[in-house]
Length: 231
Image (cartoon, rainbow, N blue to C red; front, side, top):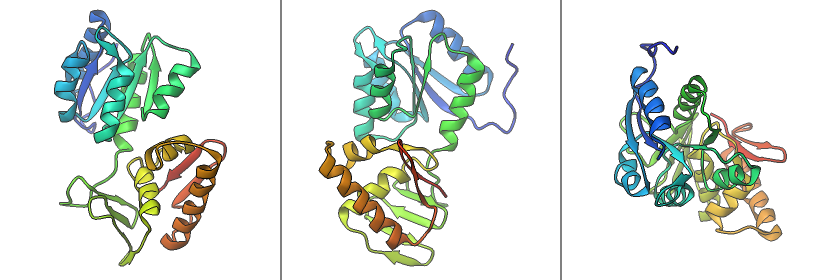
């Protein structure tokens, strides 16, 4: 049996988007036992009404009024809220689709509750850290500060001039600090498509970013997968 949460665990607002009453009840119960605020949504319509006010979304893919991937697409057009996909679909192509659309993690049902709690902790810890008193569109990673609204980057005490595309590439990584972002994700979010020419262009922009930021190790290439921004 799972014990109550540690007093050091952050209180998190979580939307449980799940149409199976039994699964939803078990997940909501364990989340509340561990001090989190859990709101159950049984379909896409209910989820759309609440997801803007939560810290994490647990998302089932098979919903009565549509595919959960549609909600994921909508969320990624306006929000970086962490999304954990919970699904009975275990085929690789379904997992890959969810990750490419911007899911932070996935769990195959039946969900092990201890693992679910651990994964929630991880995605919350990966969220961009805001500067003290800063608005939500400002991200700080190490001594690199990005103002996403003003398209401004400061490293240490100097402002760095980036091209629009260089800034967009950096912003995609900065919204997920410490998390591997696939090459496909970067290309989709910055260029809206993928081909060999654009992939080479991405490499050129990354090389320019590394030179301008002058922070070795800040942008790491994970061979065969993608890139990671490390603070």
